[in-house]
Image 1 (tube, rainbow, N blue to C red):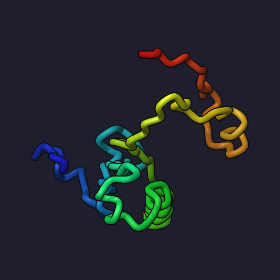
Image 2 (image 1 turned 60 degrees about the vertical axis):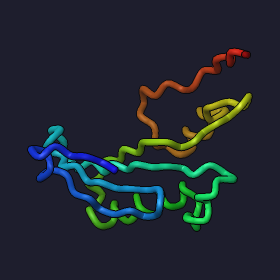
Image 3 (image 1 turned 60 degrees about the horizontal axis):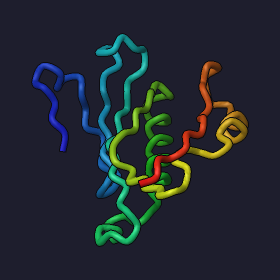
Image 4 (image 1 turned 90 degrees about the vertical axis):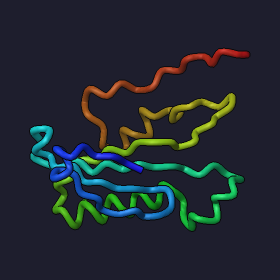
Length: 126
């Protein structure tokens, strides 16, 4: 569920709900002095083993990727994406970041020049 103040409602458009756990809104870029609109995605990644798994027939990241491609095509690449919410990223004692992201992400050539790569911080025990 999402609430929008009345004075902002004319700048917010509900686009679609791709599945039981993905909701997209389009925020008029002029609100933020931007040339492109902001495509806000609210996500709930259903945990493995949950009874709600039956409601989603594809991987959450496939759904997001397909939607983003659709919006870029529909809106002539005038999109800025903001994806947020609950990814249920319980990692136990595993790293909670992409290991060796510098190598992986540099190959994609999508990061800004001033991107700071992850630095490992030891997890607290207990």
